[in-house]
Length: 146
Ligand code: HEC
Image (cartoon, rainbow, N blue to C red; front, side):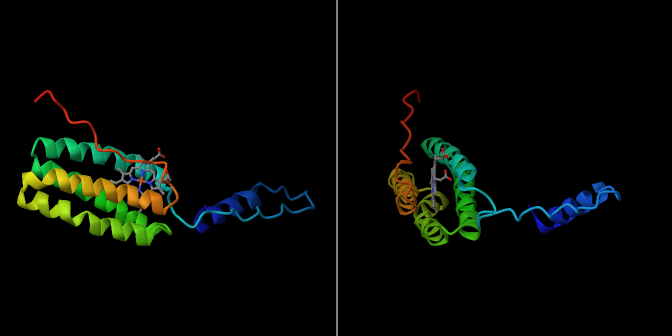
């Protein structure tokens, strides 16, 4: 609860106190909140989705789409860096995405497989570092219909 919401709640509580009641309502106990302002799991569902879309775009050699998906992955990592104690791992991961970024920017299709696999290792490196090693990110199966 933000301080603003807490103030509103207090006002509502005071207004709802009838004047006859002699015992004032005690203020609500402070809510224990995690230090992060969002939970990483929703970001990770997003990451997982982008990771697959990026793979598909690279297979199609759609550099524009690939660049967009990678940028979203980088932005998600940046928000983890800004909002969670995983900052060092998130910044390290962003550095690990630079190789694929260069490959996309220069359209080096022969390196994109290697670069994508390094990106995927970067995902798993953070998972291991965050004691989430059970969340193993895999390279999607290649489509054979094209
Ligand atoms: C900075 C650290 C970090 C990086 C980088 C990272 N992850 Fe995660 N990931 C986590 C943590 C922590 C969890 C488990 C906790 C959670 O779900 O919030 C997780 C869990 C997941 C999950 C399981 C989510 C669920 O709740 O079902 C998926 C899928 C996932 N990550 C995908 C990825 C992909 C794909 C990448 C790379 C593109 C990636 N992650 C990079 C920290 C990271």
